[in-house]
Length: 310
Ligand SMILES: Nc1nc2c(c(=O)[nH]1)N[C@H]1C(S)=C(S)[C@@H](COP(=O)(O)O)O[C@H]1N2
Ligand SMILES: [Mo]
Image: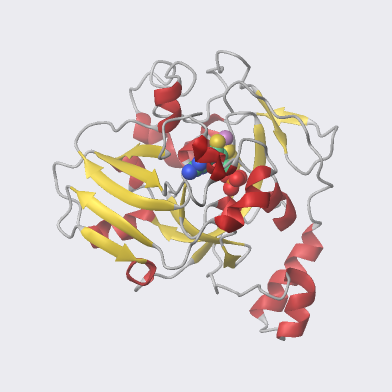
């Protein structure tokens, strides 16, 4: 991302809708392991995420697109590096340290995190600052549910997130591209917004490691780098926390990072985007304010100058 705009679009067209719908009804119908295996691979296990209306009008990218074209710099900077190397990441057991201004600080195992949680399918648009875009059928739950478990105290104003830092398992962290561990942050009202997701799966299967297993953030109205992967720490804090790309270059990557066609990256326009999976000559489409979620989230920024606070 640091100065590199990848244009090596190599994937075929997105999965035709009927194929995808068939697959979903097979899963819903409790298809035999054999039938499922022939479609999704023998290791696939359904998460049983509850369907929602979110993104019902969107055409998701194929699972193959979503797990083979990635940014996860801990495993290298090429789009194909994470798919090749992320298998090295140990994701079981996993826990998240929740600390700072909370009533119940401590180590939350995945069982703690998922206790009492109903996973939902949320089909969201996803837009990288580099100008490529996808549509992803996430499985997850609202970050607000987890924060409420931890008990947010009244002086907390921001939420800070950290990815695992494991030099033994992450070849990419040997290069000082950004300051490791990868860090991100949200204002508390952004974090509590119902669109803000903690995702544990895609296409109703457990999160592929290259996509941030076992648990990652998804903030659909912000550039993709806000959606931090493989989270091990969540801290409730009073001051705006430092974040990886903002620390790297504040003028290029703001703290807010709301998708905004009117605020160009200093080195490229943000007016257009290109959908992954559309082939080499995929048409560019216009970037949507807040990535198409303006109705839901514009109110969070009433009275704010979105160019200055980009
Ligand atoms: N820990 C970590 N999280 C990360 C990144 C990263 O390099 N490390 N890349 C970000 C960027 S730039 C994007 S566009 C998305 C990509 O998510 P995807 O590979 O699931 O499409 O992950 C974000 N989260
Ligand atoms: Mo990105």
